[in-house]
Each structure stands twice: as structure tokens, then as C-alpha cells.
Image (cartoon, rainbow, N blue to C red):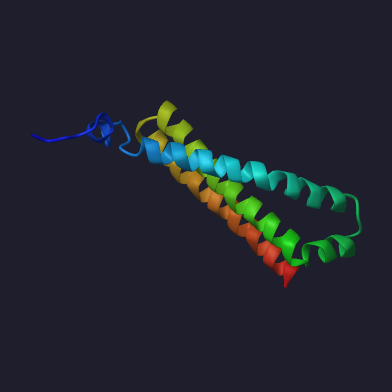
Length: 123
């Protein structure tokens, strides 16, 4: 006689086989962004309208550079997963593959460009 819980019997039976993992990832990244966004807004808000040299001086400090970098990376990864879920729910066939490819490439391109810019300013 096997002693399996209901959760263990149902695990991996969803349509994507990874729904719980996706749900937790979106929750954790959402909480992380909730904590990062106020710092991000404060850092960029104080630099808004400032001369170029002052903005570079602000982002050359380690704390603001790390906060902006983390916000860009976490935001783009959260965007990619959310857009992927939407595309998987509403499109099918070749359109789905093209849309997924486009969204994934776009999110990594924006993340790479943002992180490159922050590294160039910080160094």
C-alpha cells in the first residue's frame, strides 16, 4: 500500500507540468520588485533634471548602481515570465513560437543594454 498525499499525486499533472514553480517565481520576483522599486524611484527621482555629471556621479556610487541593476534585471525577468504566460494562454501554433522568441529576445536585450549602461557609468 502506497501512502501518497493528494499533493504528491497531483504534482506534475498540470498542462505545463511546472505551474507551481512558475507561480512561486512570479510571487517571489513580484515581492522583490516591490522592495526594489521605491529605492529605484528615489534614486532616479533625485537625479531627474540634474546635469549629466551629477547623474553619473550618483550612479557611480555602489549602492545606487546595484539597486538600479537589480531592478532592471528583476523587472525584465518578471516581464519575460509574465509575457510568456500570457502568450501561452492566448496564442497557438507558429504565432506562439514567434511571439515567445520575440519576447524572450527583447527582454534579454533590454536587460543586457541596461546592465551594460550601468556598468559603463559605474566603472
